Every structure is written in C-alpha cells, then in structure tokens.
Image (cartoon, rainbow, N blue to C red; front, side, top):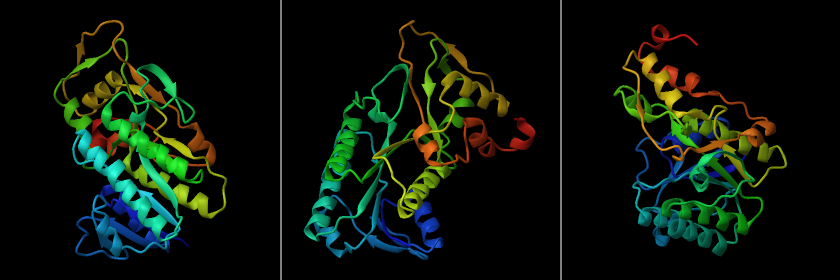
Length: 287
C-alpha cells in the first residue's frame, strides 16, 4: 500500500481518492475547501498559489497526483496553477528532502496539430495558445525534475455533469462536416481508471514511460458524434456548417501506449459512454 497525496479533489480527484482509500492506500487530499464529511480521506485545506498554506502539509508521500484545472480560460489562471502553484509545491518537497513520484494530469491541448493528423506520446507537443503553453511548461518542469515522473494527457473529458455535447446536439447546431473536424474524448470514469491503473503498475514494479496519452478508441468526426446524439435523443439533426476546404480539422489521438501497458477502457467510444447519459436511453437507441 502507498501513501498518496492528491492535489485537486474535484470530481475526478475525489473519486480517485475514495477508490484508492477503499483499496487500502493512505490518501491525503489537498483542496481549498475540503468536504465537511471526508470519510476515509485525510483532507488538508490549502491553496497551492500561497506557499505558506503548504506548511500544514506532510511531505512523506510515495506518489503525488496533480489533478488541478483552471477555473477560467484566462492565461493568468493557468499561470497561477501550472507555474506559481506547481513551483510552490516543488520547493516545499525539495526543502523537506522529499522526492515522491509525480503523476501529473495534463491535456491533449498541448498538441498544436490541426490537419487531422494522428498524434501519440512521441509527437511534437507545441501548443498554439497561451493557456496550453503553461500546461506544457509544467510538463517539462516535472520531466526535467525526474524521468520517473509521469505525464497523463487527457483528451476532452465527459460524463455526469460534463454534458456539453448533449446540450449542443439538442439544438440542431451548425457543425463542420467536410473536411471532418475530429473530436477526442475520454469518460471521466476512465480518467479515474487510468490514474488508479498507473499507480497499480508503479507499485507492481512495472517499467513505466514518462508520458501517456489517455483518450478513447474512437477519435470521430464531430459531425458523426452530434448526429448520433441527436438521433439518440430524437432531436433535429445538425446542420451543415459551410467552411473552406482548408478549414482546421483538429487531430486524432492514439492511445496504443496505454493499452499496450494493459489498460482496458470502460467506455471505448462515445456511443458506450454517452448512452447512459441519455434519458430513457434503453428505448432511445440500440447499439
């Protein structure tokens, strides 16, 4: 069993914390506003952007999960988390002479490819927007600190409470059909599953890579996804958005490294993942 710190206990972090505690791990959760009924989790109230807040935290951890996301889309918010906050944490552990292994949740937004290319962990990660540049910088900081630290790049997360595409599909939206615009997704249950799996592999002594791309098996055109959802919900179909022949197409994410390690996705495509989110889905569509 491991002594685990989870920095960022939102939907994914808190679910992971409970899962690991149930397995017998000693779990500490760092959160600005911890829950009033923490259960088996030892919560510490702290803001990582304030170095003084970290003094109440133990430094004796085997593994640290960093699962924070910005509360807004502005660059300052990303800098606060991925630069100021991360460096506060690294200084804290360095001053305590503690060297836990980090599992850092990143994003496939660090890839700037936009012509429908397939990308994997070996592909150039050169973001095209300022917010993702801060995430990429944080990746590099941790990779330079130790080759044993692990970067996990999640694609678009969906699940209960993350139902943007369902709402979109109900509104007969204008969607790019040709050239296709690809969308990459991962169900939040698989986000938790991937992180728990990597911890399990680490404790079992498996040789782990420094980066894993976590996305389901089906980087499908947005048109196909929205059309399928609309049909499943008995909503009007999407409308064709007219775009030039050289319109952006996004990228397609290859998850083979993660699957080769042995991870099995609970939801391998949007069909399996979104179906339980659709009211009366058993009557709505068969797959």
